[in-house]
Image (cartoon, rainbow, N blue to C red; front, side, top):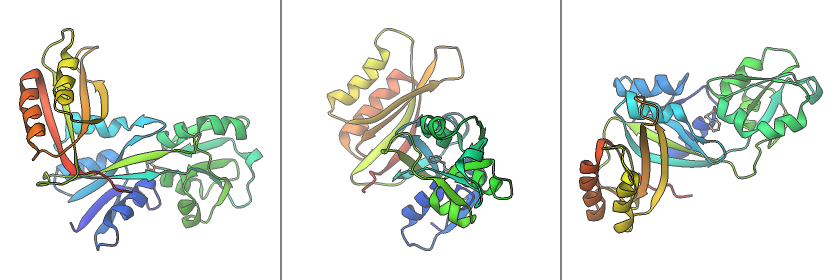
Length: 276
Ligand SMILES: O=C(O)C(=O)Cc1ccccc1
């Protein structure tokens, strides 16, 4: 790999995850303004690969990532990165907490700090941005009532002050990122596999019948999430992650059987389980 796009600008959590992923290899890191433009660029072969957030331990899935994977692009997951996330309230050097009346950040970051913001600030407005680092950049030339949520690194990059550190509502705040490209990885050991599927019919037990195939072969699911199928209200697609690569016999068998129980199935790929 020569290039890796990430949700920018410099200083986002995705930037930190990208650095962790390349672990010293000489791969150029290319910032993108939002998740959608990065994923579309990879799909259109304007970018080689990219890293995006997919789920958070406090806030759940990043819906835009799931919806693009399901409905808009044909991309494969080649790796995952798990990172602990610490949020900070960042403001002007001369600002103090009592002056803050608007807080900018990525919607996931705002949601991960909701309770604490209500504790430390009086009356304030929340404003969504494409990333935490964009929020911090935006407030850098504003006055003292503007604040942003982001990492200590991005506060330093923009020469701003941490008004309050560790403001996430729960000490344990992890985000999972995925690395995407156009082509599936070949045989991976100690792998996980991700897929998206839609049950063939709407009848009692159909989801159970799908999940039963995994259970009977002792395949451990690590995630199941549903999203609207974008057809009728009540029609869903399921995102399923499980342990084992597609070269394993019991995984191959399960996937063959799912073919007959689903109206739509998209294998997102097998990739190494993240090691801390
Ligand atoms: O905005 C960022 O910095 C991101 O990389 C997205 C994000 C936001 C909140 C927690 C983890 C990742």
